[in-house]
Every structure is written in structure tokens, then in C-alpha cells.
Image (cartoon, rainbow, N blue to C red; front, side, top):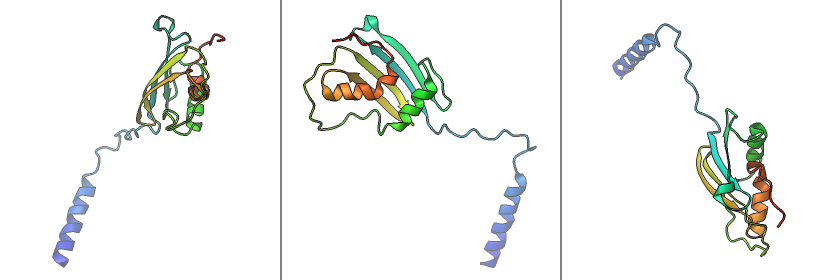
Length: 140
């Protein structure tokens, strides 16, 4: 047993001595903590001809969405922002033909979300995410 322990110590010492070169190696880049990268499309009248498109990236912050830093902050405040509520009872209120589509990754998870204003639940969901779709909605 002592012989194995001595051999193990010798091997470990050899591996440590092999080191990492001249000491000028760059530090490894840590993976993105947020890994959020989204493509956003929205149309106030529900037609693709009147569609606006943006991008949003968090950590590092960027993209074509107005005020991406604030958008990233607001996204982080939402609990499961792209999960549609299950088994919700919704009022039958029509909020207009506007539609939006969000695709990409949020905190490393795939996102495929659509938004509309077809009932009370969808209107509330749209309103919670309105910072992602800076489009003017016509009064309905």
C-alpha cells in the first residue's frame, strides 16, 4: 500500500511540474452566465408587412431593441417570462390584432414564444412583456 501511495505522489508531482507553459497563457473565458439572445418580431396590425424586428442580448448587453440594458433588467425580474400560464380562465376581451414572436435563448434555455391580444390573459401577458415590443398599438 505504501508503494502505491509513493507512486501516486510521484505521478502527481510530475503532472504538477508539467504545468502550463510560459505563464502567458490567457485565462479561459467563462461561459456566459445569462446566455440570453433573442430575436423579436412584432406587428401592431397582425400583418407581416407592418412588422418590426429587433434583437436583444444580455451579458454582454446589446442588440437593436431600444434600451437593451433596461430590457435585460426587466426580463430578469419576470418569473419564467416565456412560459404560457396553464389552465388559466380568461376573460373574453379582444385587445386588437397585434402579434409578437420571440425566438432564441433566455438564460441558456430555448425560447419560442408568441404573444397576441386575443383575450384577457393574452392582453395581460402582452402588457408584462411590452418592453420587448415597442410598437404603437392602434386603439381598438
